[in-house]
Length: 340
Image (cartoon, rainbow, N blue to C red; front, side):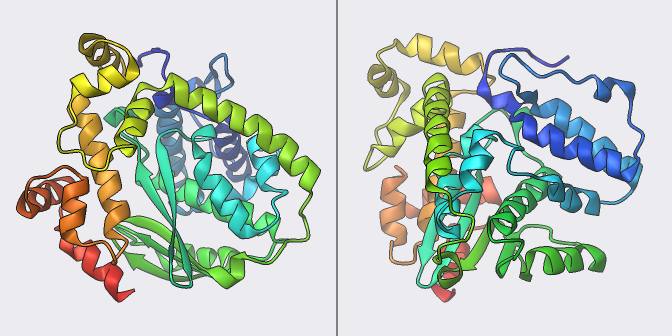
């Protein structure tokens, strides 16, 4: 039985349910009656665990993984309310990506998006937030998220997709799926990597788009910022990560220090983390992994500096931890960034 605890970790914006059910109706897929009666919470959000089970059943019944890719075409500027309206009226595609990353908690708190620039390229890195394992996003879930973002960009740019490259693990798509990504979203290359990211040429993102509507954009963005601020304040894991982000090094960070910063007792901190099925150690490790990936993508930052910022006493300790988290040594990601 699913827990009904009051936490952002398990909930997604209703827009994802809208996209899934639209694809279900288009494909004439018959699903169990229980999935037809999925209810939203008081905020109009859906439990990610229920949507994940619905998504799995759709793929199984349709016997076609491409359904996950095609579902994104059902996006409209109203799918995610103020969030998608604000993004559909941006000044440029670069502004679109920046606002998307800064406020992604609005539609999917489980994922953190990081925008980075490498020379003439802009990359968007997808990272799991330090939430309980049963609230994490699956491979097929990432596909819907990525394709929905690409669909939103395509809509903003008058149905014209700009070239991009997709990096992700296990990219064993068939030719039909590859062709769909190429034809609809202008995917120029699929690259098997541990890190999930999209890369674009900066020059393609800068021009002002024809659909730019400043008043509509800023009006809706104001509501998005208010909602995002409230979500961050109510999420204990994100509050802890914000404290981590202020530290030059995580070497001496512990539960006592974080509790002091939050003006609560260490016992209360541990209890609040336990209430969302996680721990201080798990939250710290997940944050370290997320920050490690961000730092390793910057070739100008040395491995020694990365080790220091993450709070490891020796490079060998960091290397063992990173390999435990990802299956690969950190030098592999760092070296590949230098070559890009």
